[in-house]
Image (cartoon, helix red, strand yellow):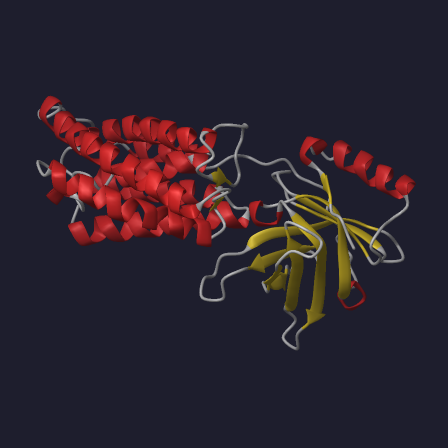
Length: 345
């Protein structure tokens, strides 16, 4: 595989992984990695070397990031178990592994240089993840980034040597470039999702206006949100101008504002796509799965049942109504153990 192609696919997968984790579409990085592997298997002379490296580096890197999580250096979005790094982290490490014999092959045999690159570039990679909402630093940024830099300075030379070792040990190994290999990786990046209730007939104009977030299983960036308010306004072209505001960490905490654009599906007015970056055609799933007849209470969910937002026109709703909505969500397959009531001042 040409160096330029290798690095381009690496960058696309890396960005997709971070963006997806921060936007509630954590599978995006895995899907891009599957494409990367597909292209890789068909274009390099000894793909078995890189395939072996992928699994080893992904497991080792997952362990390193789990240590970061347990030490309080970082908090990650879309985690599947407390105290562990998320699976999308393993995807990013596997993505990086595919460059060690290609785009970053110039590090081979240069262990001091690899340590320096890790020391400098490691913190920048995690800084980008924080900015994209994929992770957060709960404590001192100086201490956290210094810890990351030192860890990368120690770890990068190790995996560079590992890439050399696999190349030496598997020098004569061959695998058949069967479509089955590519299909296997593509399937690994996809997970079937059961259908979820969607309100098909939504009066879009009536749905516009302010909605207070009463409770949520939130995405990472809003897990400590207060005074959460979502506003919708219908644009002339039929898209939805969305403004989401909240105070971070306290009722009087710093005000955060997000302005994604909503796109109403042609198949159902209750199914939208939310575009958070105008320069990218990527949209997060947004489903109106519950709506009262008077348009005063609604629930926004996703097919994966990972996030949910209970919203109302007022800052609170009757307890009986809240319990009714909770029962509805349980029936829809949601685990409400992480449901958080959003305080409003």
